[in-house]
Length: 105
Image (tube, rainbow, N blue to C red):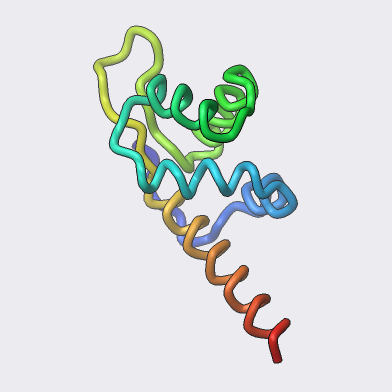
C-alpha cells in the first residue's frame, strides 16, 4: 500500500478535473463491495461504457494511487479507494458543492 500524501498530486487533479467519468468511477467504487472484475461488469451494464475503457481508467487510477485491487496472480482482495483516493473524491465533491452554492447566489 502506498503511504498517504497530504499533498494531492497535481497530476491527479489535472487528469481528473475535466473528466467527470473518472470521478464517477471513484464515486461508485466508494459504494461498491466487490472485486474489480465484478465492478467493471456492473458499471458497464449501467453506464454503457466499454469494458476496455473502464479497465483502462481503473488501471490508471491504480497507477495514480487512488484505488487498489487485485491484479492477475495476486491474492484476491476487493476493489477499494485508497486514502488518497478518498481524499481526492472528498475534495472533488466539496468543490462541486461550493460551485453549486456559488452558482445559486
